[in-house]
Amino acid sequence: MRQLFGTDGIRGLAGDYPLDPATTFALGGALAQWARTRHSSSEIVIGMDTRESGPWIAEHVAGGLASEGVHARFAGLITTPGLAHAAKVGPFAAGVMISASHNPYRDNGIKIIDHSGFKLPDEEENAIEDELFARLKKGVAPVPGSLKIDEGLDAEYLEHLAASMPQGMAGMHIAVDGSNGSASYLAPALFERLGARVSMMGGAPDGKNINLNCGSLHLDGLRVHVINNRADAGVAFDGDADRALFVSSSGKIVDGDAVMFILARALHQKGQLSEVVATVMSNLGLERALQRHHIGLVRTAVGDRYVLQEMQRRNAPLGGEQSGHIILRDFATTGDGMLTALRVFDAMRESKLGLDELTAEVETYPQILVNVRVKQKRPLEDLDTANREIRAAEGEFGDAGRVLVRFSGTEPLARVMVEGPHLERVEHFAHSIANAIRADLGD
Image 1 (cartoon, rainbow, N blue to C red):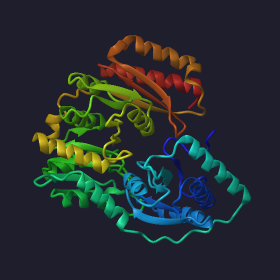
Image 2: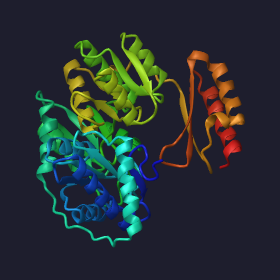
Image 3: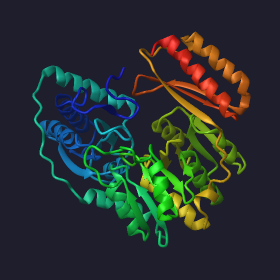
Image 4: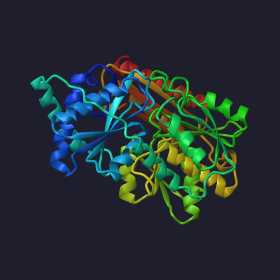
């Protein structure tokens, strides 16, 4: 059973185990050994977001790599999908992205991406973890490596994105919230290069303000920014820019479900799509809007890796999450916020419609998500009180609503989602189920 790798790599408080100098150095050594036995390349590419802990974590991973004779190339500030692109097209065995995505700056994380551009499968992470623990037992003192930024790596990534929209963005006015993260400089550079006018916010990272009251988790500021600047649309990224959410010119929030509807319709009209892959969290409103256009919706467990696996199995071109993590398989191996933005803006350009018109058919059902901090994670089927409340909700809603209860893969939380036609009853059942879980598991 894996102890360090969760659903999205290793996460924790920067400086504390497992993101302390000894463990990150050991990870570098373990990754080097893995790379040497599986790849001909002896190089690993490392990138990071704007957290103040990023540079020293990168140096310790690089030091561990160097201890086993593997060289690190350093992309510096880059998005997670940008790092995945570099790992795939460059002469690298793998890529290491140092980021905690939408978390506060004190947190950080490490994602390992294979040369294929995909995240490592569980069995590969298990092998690296086993070797990491063996190295920690030996007690080798960590020696940080020396890194110099290779600016050509993110430049090549921007070239790749720009080439995906040859028609450009001339005449468009876009408000951008960079979340003081990876997209802070890259997104405006990309959109301006394509001919758009950009009004920027959340683009002055200082190491501590990543995701702070900005970005895809805090859209109120972008709504005001769009309206005040009379922009055609606004886009907000998270810390590592693997997801994007949008705001229409009127201030309407356009979430990942609505984005999937926009992109699905555009692909369906070209005969390139028959179904969309989304998670169990996607709203019933998306499912019913797609049905009206004879487009199917396939649901997976929560997590982009599960969406991607199902997309590969079905050869589906589009999938994603309500959070704005959208995968466009014809263009990228992972969710990419800047790529998603280009595809949305291209749909606006081709249709000559704004986001209000493009998303008018998506009627969002009231959906309440309650996070319950728990002392332990027992099998859900063993929670008698919670199951009684779940059955009561399902009995009342029937096929006009949904109830989903699951444990977080990275935090001591139970997540309760209730969706249905009437907000009052949705709220009632969301909180009654949450209280039942507290009774069963402790808060």
